[in-house]
Amino acid sequence: MTTAHHAPGGSRPGGRTARTREAVLTAVFKELGRGGFAALTMEKVAQRSGIHVATLYRRWRCIEGLVCELLTDLSSDVPLPDTGTLPGDLRALARSISAFYGDARMRRLIEAVVSAAARDPQAATVLRSFFGERMVLAGRMVQRAVVRGELSADTDPEQVVSALGAPFYYRILIARRPVDQDLAESTAIAVWAAARAGAYASKGNSSNNSGNSKTN
Image (cartoon, rainbow, N blue to C red; front, top):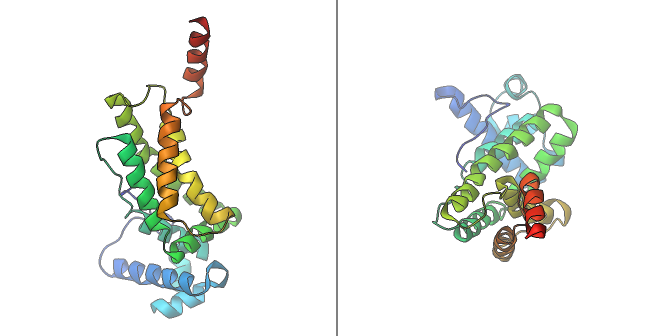
């Protein structure tokens, strides 16, 4: 999913500012891999990146701002598939999510952002924006499937995308176990079957259809 929301660090800069941003985000990523979010500090990021700590505080305000921007930056590399069928799109996206979080540092990153969002209102806003934007983007797969006649017109794209992502975040944040391609495959198959069965129909249309089916 290739668009990105770049708050709280602002829009993508160029020149020296871009180099500063790259050095800082690289340092955050490496520090997360080394000690996790609990050990992450602005001072450690400054030391590793070579950027003065005052600059970090001025631009990102807090460590929560840094990890949120890093997640947004890295996740922009997860592509939105268009295989020609919804089963193919679901499988491709699930595999991409699995590959993304296959790196332990990526799992630590999403843990860090969720932790940050629980404590910092700005981080919470960024997290909601991050997932909201990706829901819209991935929802295009479902909209294409409706146009192709693979799903009924009352299918809710957000419900489908949420169902696809939920097992990964449960595995990472609750079960605290690695994700793998088996999870990707089983999730894609289950979501496709549920979508075909009408499990993700929007509530308004669902109730109308239910009433029609009883009448018939």
